[in-house]
Amino acid sequence: MPSPLPDIMKKSFAAVAFLAVFIGSFCYAQDTYLYSQPKELGDGWKTENLKSLNVDTTLIYKAFSKLKHIPNKIHSVLVIQNNRLILEEYFEEHAQDQPHDLRSTTKSIRSILLGIAIDKGFIEDINDPIANYLKNPSPQKNLDERKDKITIKNLLTMSSGLDCNDWDKKSKGQEDKVYKKKDWLQYTLDLPMLHEPGAVSNYCSMGAILIAEIISQASGMTIDKFADTHLFGPMGIHNLNWGHTSNKEIIPSGKRLYMTSRDMAKIGQLVLNKGKWNGTQLVSENWIEESTTPKTKITGIDYGYLWWNIPFKVNDEMVVTKTATGNGGQYIMILPELDLVAVFTGGAYNSQEDKLPFKILNDIFLPTFSKVK
Image 1 (cartoon, helix red, strand yellow):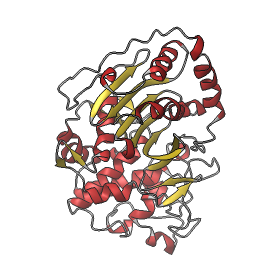
Image 2 (cartoon, helix red, strand yellow; image 1 turned 120 degrees about the vertical axis):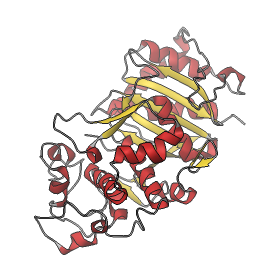
Image 3 (cartoon, one colour; image 1 turned 30 degrees about the vertical axis):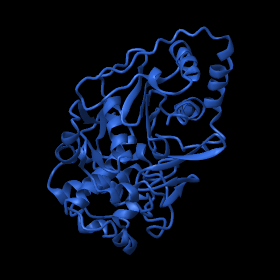
Image 4 (cartoon, one colour; image 1 turned 45 degrees about the horizontal axis):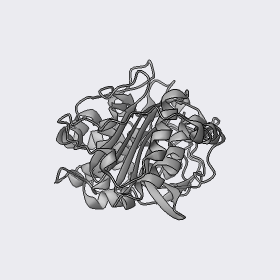
């Protein structure tokens, strides 16, 4: 279960404690990090040597020297600036060609897929009731006229009104409880209503699964086939799969993505380029703008359509990232002002250590790359 995002400017205790050791020993550290320019593999990425940029790389060298030798749960770190892959590092047994469990980062990719479904005419309007597209199943228990008012937008902003809150163990729709049920869709639709749709936003993974099922039923394609046809195929993303940690048989809409770090970075660059990849508009610019613009708040953090807006401070100025997050430390962080994408994967599941990438971005990458012209 993902933990609530902290106030980034206050940071979590675990991340601060780790980085106090991590950064505090810089002046005594022997630099052992050997930077190598990422290789061009014919996968759509052009690369550039970090040393060719007009930046002071001291913080990066010291940081990666420590990451390579101090126990941590980061699996990979990538940085793209000006559409060039300039930093790519993997830790322990993790490798460039190894798909990683994205966890809830999959939600943000589902948001892109919904935008494509709208562009293609499979879905008319996000203000439509979900019943217009979700023909099967339909609510059988806790019947409530408010359920007829739940819209696609409510699912995108996690404000369906259903008793679904992953961060409340008492919630009937908390994801770990739903995973034990035979029919996730039916169980979710049968949850009791606690609020009027649109009134309150609570983090609800089942709502994102309903989004995937709506795309599937509206298009007549399973979500994986839809994604391959309209997003991953055109982007040259092929080394991926859909799965889940549950031992039960999972419907396609309930599965999450396993993707390489380089391909995660492609998703970030697509958003940074306002829906374009290699000059081709794969999802409308309007959808990218709408989906990544704040619409509500969850635990005090601005939230769009399955995308977070997370603030950082650099040179006494606030910089807001468009961020996809996943339990364990899976992040796609997009900084339009700096023309930068940062990707992290990790294994700090159900731990505040999964917030360490926020500190690395704030204290290492932003001071370094904000000076690139």
